[in-house]
Length: 232
Image 1: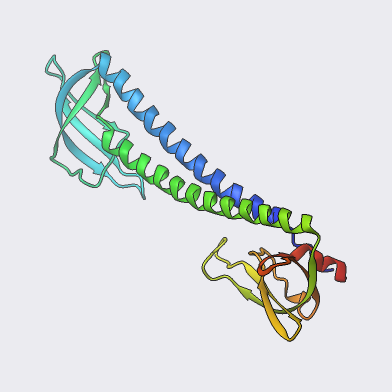
Image 2: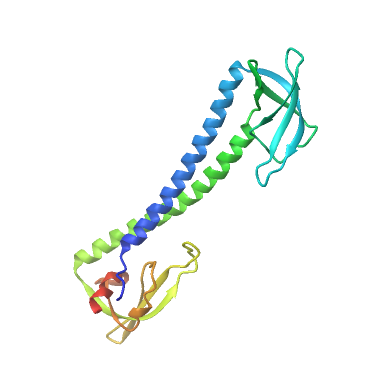
């Protein structure tokens, strides 16, 4: 059975792309704000001191950093922190804050980690959101043209002559399909190209497809991909 190719799939993809981007940006900001907020609260009641990175244990991709320092009472403490960066090394001096009631509870300013996380998730989110926004803009423009041309009621039936892939766009590692159609009128040849399609329309080769046109300019058109279903 031939599949129906609806523009709603392209619309859902565009909004989904933008939604994922927005979600990534929100996560990046939320986590970054959370880390920094936790540190700020800890710093208010904590005691500032200087320690030495005494050891770094590497367990896969999650290194654990141990820091040794002296409390105000002269007690030597060695404890781990939930933070690691590539510029850390054994013997490096580092500023930290510890809980006076529980010196083993210590932390350092996560500003670099916070910025990295924000840039990583925020940056990726911004890219996804921008791509989604562009696709949405194109979709809305296509919808507007579609509505205008369909309302005019003028169309022709063209021959589907080729199915190609749009290599400029990749969706989940795959390129969308594009339908190419041909129509002859008064000795003139006209060629049309559809919007991006998420499924392979090759079964419709050599069939007729409806093309809505501007009566005065055949360069303004809308390829009604859904009309192919009528040929079943």
